[in-house]
Each structure stands twice: as structure tokens, then as C-alpha cells.
Image (cartoon, rainbow, N blue to C red; front, top):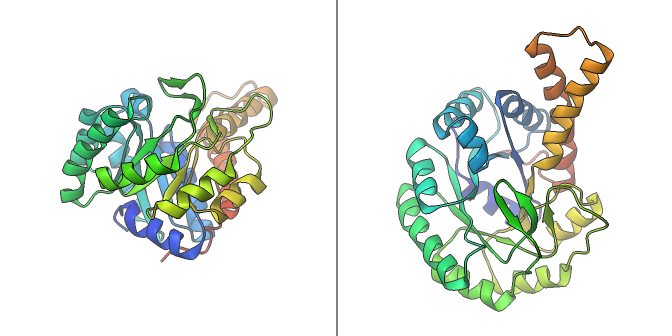
Length: 283
């Protein structure tokens, strides 16, 4: 089927008490693996690309690849710009055919974050494209954006931010971090519950790679409707190739590396979809 936006799938997740798994893809093989997992579990799915990924390939390349795979899929597939780093990139992604946009102004002061998010909404919404924004800083490193310390989302600011920007979903900071964790993460789940009380749009959890299944499921119960997975997919894909080369060092066909990488990513994605509860939820 054609690419769909994130609006209906996130609305359904919010009403149904589950979360959509949103998975970052770096190449054609990962795109195919993610959609294959979604088909096997009859799950709606969001495929994401970061600014560095589209710089490596291009917005046009990922639109073409994901749209081609989605066309033959029987489940809803959304293509999302993850951590859009500028107004210009967000607008270009809308023009090229992305069906969901994130503008990440979380590194900016509150008023500047409001302003850039409003500008993206003003362009995207008339084109039927929902917009995700982030308030508070998720620790760790995502692409070229790095937060040295966590600054968790303030519920009152979150309410005002949503009202003033008109965004469709909000990524919140509750102690998660991008990349893998050093030590055991301590999540401020009560803060998440407090945000849910005053914000009625879908909430997004970034930095889920490395969290326990129990933590993710608890966050979903408290109102998270979209969970992002990136780093662990990269590791699964790369480790599968490393193992193949160790076991069969004479391997030279890139397709063989792609095949084992796809298999590893598919299994990981299926596991994460079950944790999010979106398996069997495709309409």
C-alpha cells in the first residue's frame, strides 16, 4: 500500500493502549528487514532516518526505497524524519515525500524551540503531514546532536508547548539516553504520568535501545504511543556481518552480508514490536 502518515497509527495506539515501534534504517537491507518484521506480525510500522543518514544517501533515495517496499506490503508503513535538525531539512523532507516529520529544537531555549516547531507545523500541516517535536533534552548522542546532561521535560512547559506549537506528537525526556547506557538508567516515570495528565497528544519515547522490556512496557502503560529504536538495530546488523566473516572469512559477496544482517534486524524488530504491543494491530 502507499506510504501513510503517522497520524492515524499513533491515534489508534493512544486509544488502544499500545505503542508504535519506530525503527531507524541505514540502508536498503534494514528497510526491507523492518517491513518484513511488520508483515510477519501484522503490525503498523514507522521507518525513520536521521540527518546523517539522509546526508549519507539522500531524502530522495530513502523515499524511493521505503515507498517501493511499502507498495507491496500489506501493513501500514510511515516514513519519518527523525531528529530533523533544521527548518530547511524538515521542509525539504515534506517536499520529497516523507509522511511524518520531527523537528528537534530541544537544544534551543524554550521560546526558540516553540518558534521553530511552529514554523515546521505551518508548512507540514497544510500538506497533511504530522509533526513531532521534542521538549527537554534526552541524554547521549544521536547523529551530530549530543546532550551532556539530561534535562527532563517539565509538565507545565509541555502543556504550553503543545498548545502554542500545534504539533501532533511530543517526545519527552524522562531519563532516557541515545545510544547504549553506561550503568542502569533511572527513568522518572512519575513525570511521564504527570505529563500525560496535561498533554492529550501522543507521547514519544526516545533512547529505548538498552532499556528493559519491563521499562518500555511500563512507559507505554503510562501514555507513550511511539517508541524509537536505533542503536541496537545498527549493532544487530553489523554484528551479524562480523560473525559471518569470522565463520566464513572467504565471503566476498555483499549480498551475503546483507542477508545475515536483514535476518538479525528482522528478529530484533519483531521482539521490540511485541514489547510495544503493536503486533496484530495493522488495519
